[in-house]
Length: 460
Image (cartoon, rainbow, N blue to C red):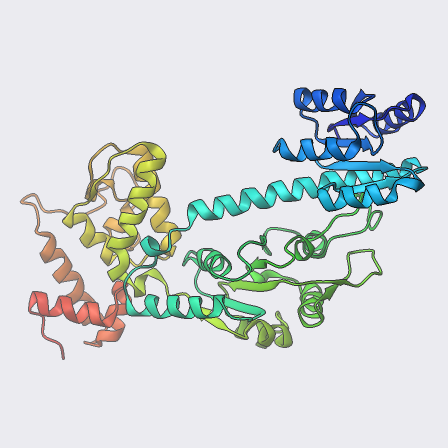
């Protein structure tokens, strides 16, 4: 049941009483004023969620009251009530900033519908403002991108595509590579940046709900549809819809999504009206959609429609040169969040971090640094702060607490010898194939050759 507070400003006592009774029966709280001046005083004091005001009021008319409410900075929507002879004033009120108007006489159903629509619009605006602010705070492109040629080429493509009219973009890459980051970057660098970016994870909702989330539903469309709801494609008008994990979408919903993309119209669940849409669709996947098409799990026509402009985000193991930049980015981020003063990573720890294959990619790196920032107080991140899987080079470690996790000799060891031995072992396992050895170590072939030269290891 709703519990919003509605301020009613109406000088006719009988109508004011009926409005209060109808709204209270629908679960709303009501406060009442009989003239414009008192109404504005109560508005300032009570900060209601919605205002319903007559256009003709004693002491201060409805239009003057509306202007003062809008100038106050409070985001409560205003519904104007008007008689037949005051339609010009009602239209002017909407032009000034009123959400809508009700023409007298109106019934209870029209009143409740107008109230719910105004409150839903207000909630949507607040949510979109919050999402835009969160995106603005979290995006730090220059610090996050890195310096490898592969990433710089990707950034150039992103900037070029963002300013284009491309209606669909497909982001491909392993889980945790930063597809969400690049979706925000594409939106924020586009001409659509001032409009909403609405996101949905296609794997997080059951099939019977995702269609309603995307396209909305009409009142009574199903058991829990108590009122009309606009979907993401309507709310994001002029902006972007980001469909994460698109590979998990059912075939039935895929067909409806394709129709919306190609025809730029949608129908809410349970509705008959064709509603025009104006959004850019960014889809992301960590599964191979081409294989999913061959396996009949993904529609071929939708695959090619989304893949108008494909972008592949490289995994972290293929851009290990960017690791120091990313570490610095996350250290600064979590120093600020948790009030820490971590200055960096020791050279010894960096050897292990660069040798680790990072199966969870940037998300795994981010979680590691956040965990260290929460638990540790050391100014430098050392080997002791790293989890066993990183200290073991990504190999399976013993889980028995009574057994040693590493065979460190009593005399100690030289970390450069450890790195050299890892490289030589990888080359032996791959019969000297440097490309396979680099993949085994989670390095690029260029980085492997550099380290081979560093340690005087001859290639075959």
